[in-house]
Image (cartoon, rainbow, N blue to C red):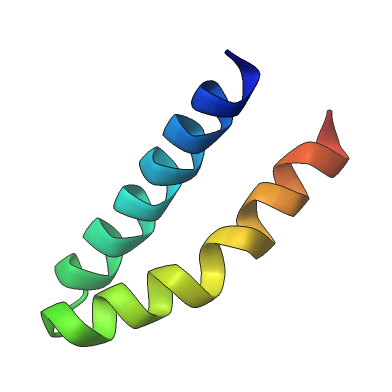
Length: 50
């Protein structure tokens, strides 16, 4: 169960980053690349704050 929740949280964070990049005017490919590069950093920061 923990692994599924972790995967869902990662996907949710990825989608949030991607949406922000698209809103800023990035292309689909660029938004996906930036989200993929950023999601681990964001999750690590969130874990450190807890």
